[in-house]
Image (cartoon, rainbow, N blue to C red; front, side):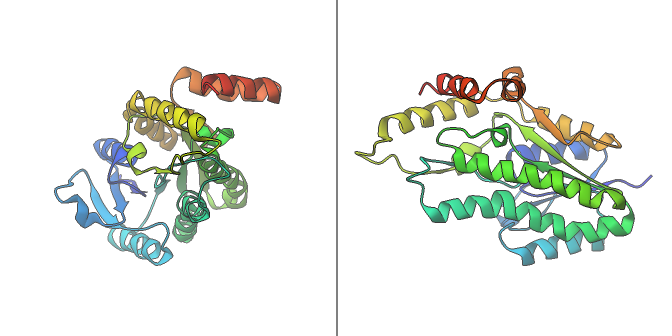
Length: 269
């Protein structure tokens, strides 16, 4: 049996690299992407293609290259993303647009590029890497939560639109994992004299602690592999520490204000 062909956006580091390395070890043919693969000299876990999710032309070219080389594309993992923190009131609008371009519009562009090939094959899988943060509005991470939440909801709609083509779309929502996401995250500056100055700085420190103490990205890779093996995977697939996943259950069953109080206590606000 021929190897299944996988395309992973944002495959040069972090969760994307962990997923790609793990799937390669499971005998998948993996292509990752990076905005500039030349910046990763010596990267040999799998092949990296140039792709910027903000530039549709690079998406079209990368997808065409995979199909040209392999004759098919079985699995898309929409992993490329960016973090953002800041008070809703004080975050620059250009940064809001940027996070939605990367976390929401970008994955949609990639999905639109692969759907014709998957439809022609009569099968395919798309796994959108969202976030547990996308299920709730988190203080000083509201724009990140909103961008990942929007991707999760669009997945629900798209699943129903493509079900007759043999294509499955699903979400994988990680909690905190030890990656370099904090280094690439946009932080709205803590401004002297801002009404949010003290509380925002405290929240930033807490967020960085959570990432530094995060789980091993291999857990996410193993979850991706498990989803791929299923004929009809669940729509939403959280992965992370027990309490992170349990928080999703609590959000479903608790009154809004009680759940809000739990978040305020968690973030020490």
